Length: 342
View 1: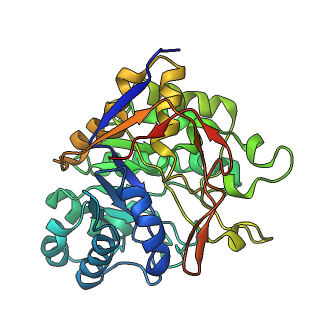
View 2: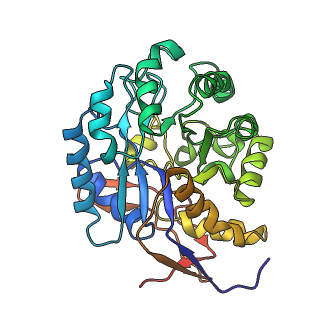
């Protein structure tokens, strides 16, 4: 354990984030923008973002919600297998990538892709490859819940082989298999969440069910967590931090139909500093939360330094705005690091 009492992170980036819309956006947006300099924003609103008009309008709403902070929202487009080359060429400079959801696999993905056959996806993927648009993928099948990501690995391989110039990001990876696949193809990259570096399925459902730890992809086995943590602590150059912070109102989490998503935005940097300090890997943290993403996405983020101090931070029980509320991971618990207010 280091003896540090302060630590600075330069230009932190969250490369997988849900901000929702309306009052929920106004609640959770600033909880990211006050500590991150930019984030890759998911497009699975209702309806999903599939037009330039919808995308630019959503980006404006995010900027308005986060207007008091130095923050760039990098918005994605919801994947469709029939986007024309002309449409993608026209929207290319307004998006950071296109996000694919298998139909019905997670929150607001009902209109996602029903077939993962390469030939079905080819028209859009060929255009993306030619235009240099990154391809972000929720990589799960509809099989047994613990095997869904592992079963998706051959699909990643077939796409990587068919489109070697296409930059593919395996989103929120949760398994040892996915970490190993990073080494096999030059065009494969990945994000990993905070919760998947920390928990296994046992933490979610081994005793009393912990609804605020339930997410998709579901947390896996100890050996999977170890592989993810090892890659993150070493700041594997093809791995980026992506919180997948996914807010749901308390009543939708604490119910028989528990919504999938862990809300980590207010605690992400504090917990990461503590985690990397514990493993004597603080020298790698800036790569993991900033520099790797800058390289993968060719980003030049706005300058922003976040100073953390070794001072207890009691995580709020709930965050509220008007009629919206959301419970964070580690609610009511005490963290060893706090963010110093500027």
